[in-house]
Picture 1 (cartoon, protein in one colour):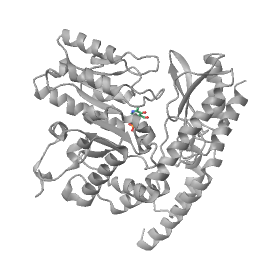
Picture 2: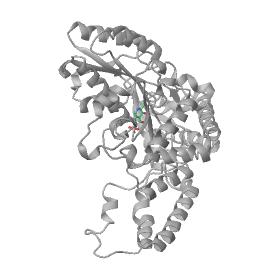
Picture 3: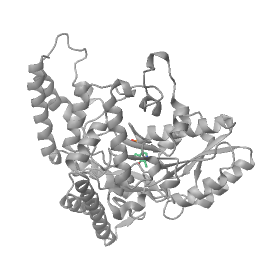
Picture 4: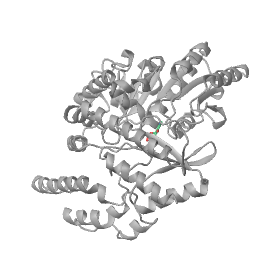
Length: 462
Ligand code: PLP
């Protein structure tokens, strides 16, 4: 592709994306294809000669689009959101255009320094503890952030004399599966992961944590890592971080202490609104913290903000310096390759910077407030219909319900919503029974879309 062709095709593609974002609300939200349908439309062998870009664009429309689930749709209420504002797409494009591989400060000083700087801005905007200033890094996902926290905690414990076979990790029974996965990757066997008991609001019970830690220590094991959820995935339960921190500090007598990680993947961004700062209550006691700018903030996936109170354990766990990576500045600057699992890294800070500058924090905070208000409105409407039962406290923008008629009826309602193409929702299990999550978080959602969802649910509830 010549520079001229690149310019022309680039314009075509930007026009295509702009039209898509205009029309995304008109598509069936959940892709309706069957497994194998998309591959069946692709040629068995790769092209033998170059094709025009317009031919590829045609196939985007004809082959690829039917297999797209429209995460940016205003009617997307499934999982948690993965928003991307238009300016963040431009940030992504520039990152690709510059093609920087920012593994070390020297491999592109701007990539490192902008990243540290915007992460410091986020400390201020989210009112996070001052110890996080200068100690932030962008990870691809919350799962990677948690893994890095576990690796730092594991190596701190090992350095203090614990053997890996004795290490035990803890999270509530509601914690995201990425905690268990991170422990597994770090070599902590499944039977050394304790799923701590929860209270009526699905939050970790600190007494249960204390009891589990005491029992493990009595058995000669070494508690080394606790993850507290600030907004667990199933029900958006908030573990009581200050009380959990009191337990971990109390029990932190040996082997470097117990590492406390706070996983605020979805909810942490709510702290952009001063009235929702409670989401990060107690985070000043944490050794590490993460929240996903790629969920509620509109920064395109992937952009997890990960902070540590002390960078040394993380660097001890992840730094390796072969001669070919040494630079004149090694040791005197941040080399972000030592803060993550892979070596290479994209210039992700650009899209966060673009969003903060061009979308602006006030607009993002206003969107968050709207989502929370509409969730309350939906919850009030649902509470007035006897067929529906709200099964968890409604925190922020997640509503979890089931039909009183039972699991089969709830499953049928969920299937009918998905098949309708008019909205998408996800299921979970609460107290051993099926429940449906309504996550109101798409940046294109307006009140009318939430009202339409409620009409749809009433219509299909039978
Ligand atoms: N933690 C929580 C509380 C989540 O809700 C999620 C995903 O929704 C994750 C972790 C994993 O996020 P990621 O996809 O960024 O790894």
